[in-house]
Amino acid sequence: MMVVLALIVGVLLWLFGDAIKAIAGGELRGAVFDRCERCVAHAEAMLPQELAADVASEWRAELTELESRDRALKALQFARSLPEAARSMRGSRASSRCAFVRVGSRTAGVIVASLRAQPKIFCVMTTRQQLQMLGAVVVVAALPQIAGESVGMSVLNVACLACGWFASTVQDELRALRGKSR
Amino acid sequence: VEDKRVPERITKQLLNVLEILLSDSSRRWYGLELIEQTKLSSGTLYPLLCRLVEDGWLERKGDIASDRGGTGRRLYVLTGVGQRAAIELLAERATPRRSRPRGTFWPGAQPT
Image 1 (cartoon, one colour):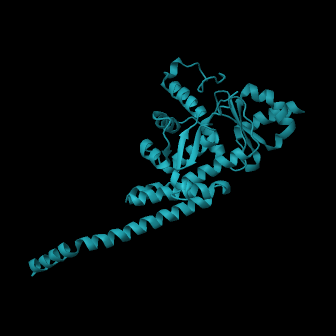
Image 2 (cartoon, helix red, strand yellow):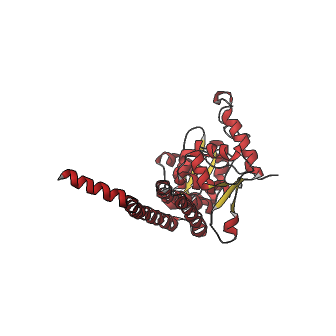
Image 3 (tube, chains in turn red, brown):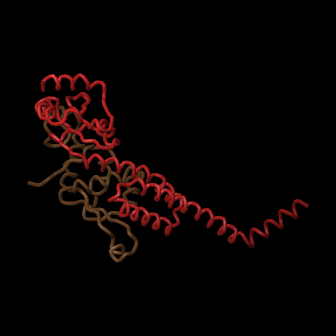
């Protein structure tokens, strides 16, 4: 009995295997690309307004390309990281839109990365000595909006207090700067 | 005087992207091709490209079909400034760390 049943199933698969695979594969493919589209829409909503349409259309075009090459898994991988890209691009835009002072070309990557994730941030990247030279200006002009963090290597990062970021290690620096300004 | 803006973070990923772009500097690359070449995720690559475009190191253009209202894919190519900066930066990476003056990373940066 079992042998007969297996034979029947075998014959049916042989006859209709391609059709079954096409239907199941097509459904799966459709579901994957629907999911991809949802990821793009999610990412698009997070992008800065001035970039959103252009960048999202680029991402959709790349997904279409992957779809035409039948690379569903690759497309899903691509799409799932897009919200992360959008978040990062939004953070970077927010920082570059703000008043922005850069002294020298040194960077302090880790801190800048955390600053970039905050809205309404500007950073002053400078050496300790340069900051102290700048300090008089900073203190007079905008001290209430300024906080800084010593990150070693004589590099100081200064960020906007409007975002609520304030490193405790900096408070002494600021007190010293305030003291100087009085 | 050429305005050479330096990306705020010189990361390994940035250097990898620059290396690929520089391997054929006249070529225009799709984002997807760069993802395939660098093995970076789209979440890492696109913010990087966006920053390089803003800093003037990369030019972002529509492909021919998108000019005609077609695919909408975008192509990236190094600008002159980007090419020179990438060469310097990659040469700097090739320099053993110990032989660099302490505190410099970017060529011409002031040691602190």
